[in-house]
Length: 85
Ligand SMILES: [Zn+2]
Image 1 (cartoon, rainbow, N blue to C red):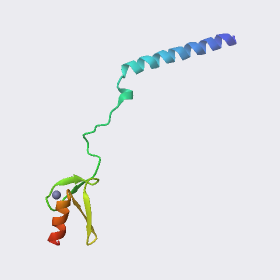
Image 2 (tube, helix red, strand yellow):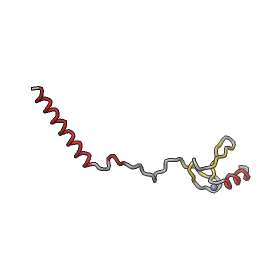
Image 3 (cartoon, rainbow, N blue to C red):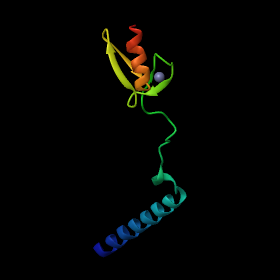
Image 4 (cartoon, helix red, strand yellow):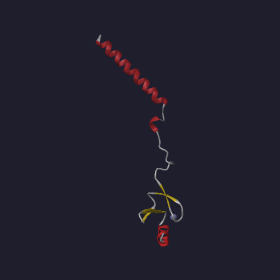
């Protein structure tokens, strides 16, 4: 009687494995998800001198009168400091 129960349990387990196997076949891309690289993850900041947008990580920073200004290049930073705004 006990052997019969174990046999039924094993049979049920095998069916479950087969079902899972076919489910995984039906969804080949499920475990292969890619995050889109085109979406901007970093915050964009504005260069006040040449009015271009750069990512915060790449931008040069200058704090003036308690405000942080961002620049695309050292030239823009120098121009900003020379203008004395
Ligand atoms: Zn610039």
